[in-house]
Length: 275
Image 1 (cartoon, helix red, strand yellow):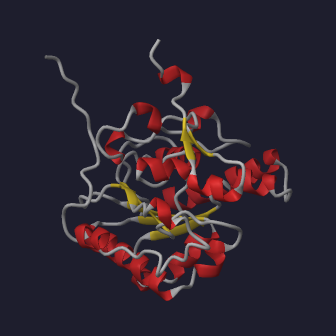
Image 2 (tube, rainbow, N blue to C red; image 1 turned 135 degrees about the vertical axis):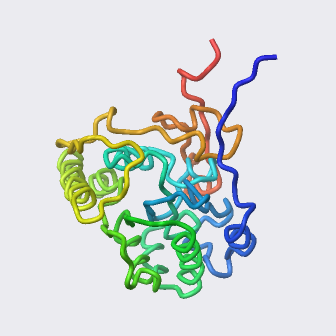
């Protein structure tokens, strides 16, 4: 019988990550008034086998990540996957979040960014990654992730390059709040990411690429071609290809805030449906 060989994320069965996922904090550390703990924690995405050269710190999981059980897999993830692609980093990365759980409500992340128990557990992850990989660069996505990096003692005296960039969702959140138009916000993001690409790619000590390629800057927006699909090997076994695709397939639904908190509607994209 013909078969297809699939790559997949092997999970957390080995030290030091096994203990980290056995001892994760819950509602006593992440209050339900500020975090959607009922959906469970989402720990990481990428290499845990010692081959990561770039560490990325994001913010918190959204609905796509909650379903796929890996971070940064939706629109934001594919935007930033494209950023890594421009650096030639195709698979030698590991991504973790500032918060294990999805932030609920305005200001929840800001209110709890300095909570000691949240910080202590996150630093255990960062320490484990730094100890078991030859990191060459660390990138944080947004202000809260930058604060998380500043609160990590392991960053002191490090030899890797460090930069913080606007979060991939900045054009959406900033324009939705009326701070700026979507077009202007996207250009601001692209300018910011271009500065980071220059900093990371130039001597001294740029991260070693998986696939060397000429650096091509963003223009005024991120084109569809500048999104990169999430690797199959980044996700748990058996997840369908459309969960790695660019079309949105998960959204919060309901007639009020509590219903939306409790409900994620999954819709298979039309292109992935049987004829």
